[in-house]
Image 1 (spheres, one colour):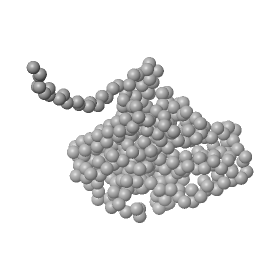
Image 2 (tube, helix red, strand yellow):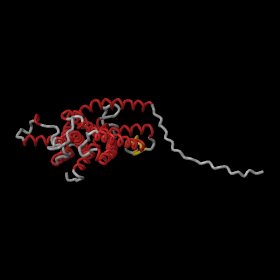
Image 3 (tube, one colour):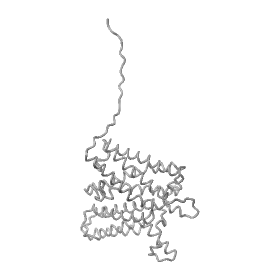
Length: 350
């Protein structure tokens, strides 16, 4: 007798398996070294971030000098050509501290003090925007043109590289100064109700630093543990899409959470970025990791062109100063511009 019983069909289900990458001993050692170094850097930098004023100015000055030497290291130009180093250092410092110098000189003149009387200078004086003198830019260009014409060691590509990197570093460091000093500038405006303490005035720079750092940390660990799909192998062979999205997620969630918590506690990062303007905070939090990746990839592309692995070796496990803060400089510029636009009703005529 035939068995005509129809057996029920079994459903085939597809599952997505997420597997951890095998971590080599070298990678484990690198992760440990990078973590220890990051903690040491935080111990050095965080006090200056919160103290602000001349302490913060000194930190930016010191870091920018190291960054200039790393920029020059990429050109492979010998230090005996001191005038090239001199032009690069002066140009970067002038771009970085332009607002600080210009506004304090103007304030001294207006108060009938000698313009060179540094004892009357105030660090926070006039940090309402980021800007640069067209006269200064023209001077830098002319200096590089002279080097191209009269110095056979300075090719057109080297001069273009120096101009681009000096401009990037100068604006980046100036934007970093702005993010720390702008809250105090707002507090000094007559009839303002915004009155941050030395701690709460640092919340803006902490917010931006947190967004940048969490993107780097998230991208590194997610990339190491789960990364399989290369992002831009011709520029950065170790970057993966998994790391990219992991970094963005870490950055957006933690930076937005930080900004909302301090806002709810009555100490917003800026008076026009309270919890009521949560949409602006979310916008800034979403753009920061994107800007961080652009900055990182830009410097990776530059190093590829120069055929160097790192800009320096001063930071164990991270390379040079520029290798560590490339993302932060780009994020500082983008965030500073967005803050200025938001405060001016999205008008570019600022």
